[in-house]
Length: 356
Image (cartoon, rainbow, N blue to C red; front, side, top):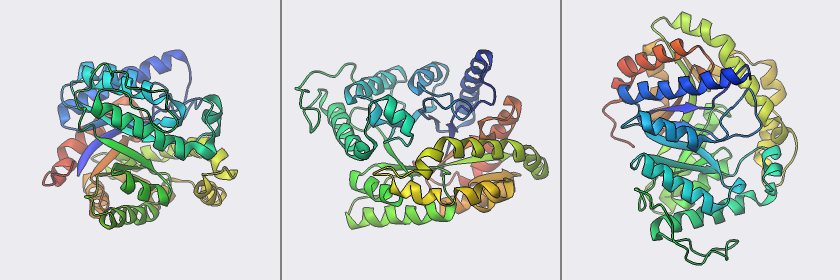
């Protein structure tokens, strides 16, 4: 199992100087990750979500990180394709790949926020179809070095792609998967899976099995499975839990607020989210660190405890664990201490795996 970092860029305060500090700290944390042997730094793309996420232009921040690192790969988790023209996405992917000398990991999805879809002129009912069309244009263009006509984009007639990406033939491609059918869809598209801590682990574990079954049915080799999770690993497990109680609960409260619209209202094409929404009220009443741990949505403790919990993910088929260390909201010094301890005491326990 490979160890990555996952950044939502949450921020309890919203002052300009806080955002400057946050970006500076994330870049420095990625420099440390590069030295410690983490594989990839993943950044989300969200809009209009102050508090929960201040990451609206992740490729720009990843460009800065590329200049300060040498081995660390740069992941977009994810580009919501209905918000963007596929030509723009392809060109920006190619540019980042050139800047980083071939270190880009491309994650895509359809987005979940009604407000974002409205702003960017996307019809949520057509989001899945538009995502498939855009993905086809992007994949074909990367390989052929020119933009090719496709359903919905017939105006593309062979214009050249510049710059040419370093990983033109084999850009690693990942799909955000939340609903069960999205895991099956990932198998059909023959792409890797990015799962997140948005629902209890036992449900995601079932979905991973469905992904592997769908790949076997199509007689294709399964891709990699990445799982994002909040984590805090400290020498003293009791201290880790004390620190995590406030910060992890705050982060999940923010997550509930930004997902509430799609969870509580029925949007065509997002039926599965509405089903999860029926559990929102109960989850809010029980929201504490103990509940989050019981649901398998966070990992908090000393190295031995973290190894045990991470091994459960590996046994279920998770190849890449995307670690939101300290949920991204703890003090920088605590996050860096945890990153260091994970690299020294936890990652070696999984060094025998060559996945990813």
